[in-house]
Image (spheres, rainbow, N blue to C red):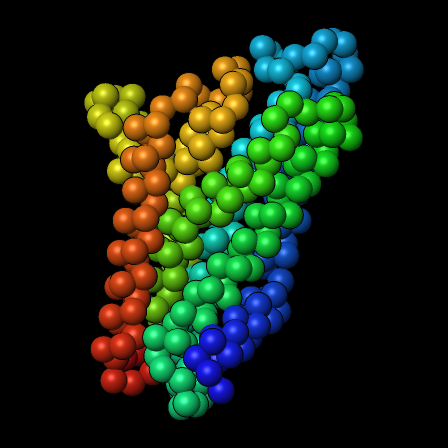
Length: 271
């Protein structure tokens, strides 16, 4: 069996492992429910006022708002998918079995990483599609909807930060609960401390992971769509910085996880 087939087999295995836990499906359903409630709420205001904008927000760009409101759930889904990817194999003793097969450890990690990320990729595609369908159904023709695939790809790239961090914690600490808690702690601390430090001390908090994770999709779209009441002003410098921060977080996390896996002499959780 070639390396590509071995990695492909692991990707399929990772899908089955993650979906069997039902957590991912529950979070995707929760994200869609939130998007639906948001759209219904805006629609009720739209029906009451009869105008094409609500609070200065043009409803012809409702799909952007609906997609954007799902970004937090995307990060949480990334944490949940990656948090158990490596650690559950140690907890259940299956890592010993998998690594006793004719497979390199790098192939093993790559298959697990790509399997989890491709599952997250599909969840993000579904969330983006639902946002577009809801916006079209309730508010009619949407401006710049042809750029929805671009925003989806930007969301997928931005989710690499917390997926990679959670994946790293999963391998380094080899405990699913601990890995998820640490990744969620980074997520919430970054959400809270970033704006707080920026407000109180006027510090640049772009190094915080949530800035790049949440800003990158809107910065990408602002480069091709003119919607001043929906998106931030086009800023190629900020876009490049966000892309670089995502890459640095992802690469550093993957390297740490790879070193831990390759250098470890045993596959037990306590190693």
